[in-house]
Image (cartoon, rainbow, N blue to C red; front, side):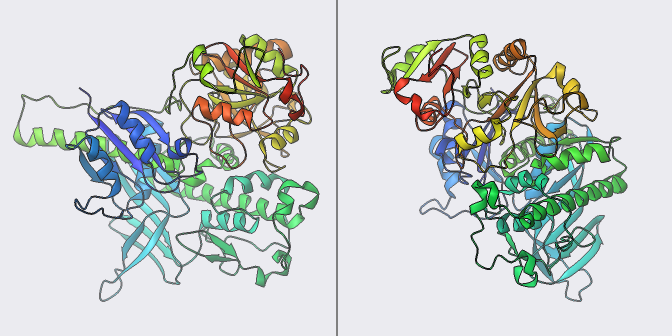
Length: 612
């Protein structure tokens, strides 16, 4: 019988993961089930995993914040929930080692035997830091922001550099027991990015939107330098607000002061955007990615290691990730595709699994208990992100939806299709959503919960952004047959990029061929696809290739603006019915759900008026 660890991240991007004998088997982000964006309490994910699997051990990751104790037992709510179903389950709290859990997620996912892990985060755990030069050996408390760890398989992950920040002015730079501590009451890399994001009118955690705007900007002498030497945000520009976001002190700079103007109107009206908004986004992208590059150099200098793994929220910055590939062609760089806080569940669960095996084997060595075999440490590199919920259904299951009547007679109808049929719909510039298999882990849709479209439509970006209710400047991704990737994109030494972690430059021969997914800077975030990774999705792209000569589909997440990705078939059909989306393709059963003539007036496009 397997030994099952249920590991969770309680906090924004709440998640639950199932680790079976040290192998990642299931990963669920709470928002997919609860339908609340970035839901931080993974109760539904825990229930879903426990409904389908036994649980021997609960590992509570996160930042070490204590959960409220319940009456009678004194357990926290997560422990109490597990013990309702598995009273004998043990509970382990990983404590205030948030960055360690990020590092573990990236290291174990990489498959490297040795590596140096770089964690770049907005705000990790609040930790006590000893002031060794003080007579009283006093301690201060500050938040993790950037960390470097030396990692050796199976479970030796040791910090060698820790950067902390807080809202006060104390500064310290010390080397203690081989660890370099850098403490300052200032704002650091990700918080600077968050401050600009708030300035631009979004929540601090929506930094991906700032990244999307950045290529529209340029160097602007009116904008002050944002980061001082060493990557710290200039306190004349930024005001820290740990552990939450940060903001820009606009009173010091008239060029940055809105004087009470509406700072969100331009989000959906490109004619309202100002140079300062575009150029500030460009500046924070440029300065932060250069500094993280400097941190990579520091990590290599400190360790001599050529294998680099990256995690923490900044790891989702696909522009920066591509920049590293250019700056460090000699390094083997792996970026954790679940590098946001959701991945904490994976890192915490795997780290404890290896620690548990090591303790077991050490006990056998100490007591010479040769009757029981030593346990092997499983090597479990990340080979797929299709780790989420899966829902088995048949054509008959579609009849339960009240909006579905007999074929051809309802507001939404169903018909049989092949991949070639759907490819023709896309070629005729109809939007098609896809629902199949297990939901993707992490924030990227990879063909199981995706919306696809024709990448050659010059108006495609504006069209789909309007249908999804997204800001005008936000780019889209492309899914390409892996064997054609190097022909179309400068892969910078990569054979594949199956997790959509890089915004890549087009090859010269194809510049201008993909206007709806090529960003204003000439790059495109791409996903390579093979038959082994996703046969149904590969077949659809291949059929589109046969019709168009383009081995690529426009790909975006199956959701509307501000909503989580769909998880269930109910979510998918509800989204179709309550939006201007056109078709829902169910490749596992060869069906297409589509709008009838009564709804056709809602669709801004579609050459067949809702019929195949």
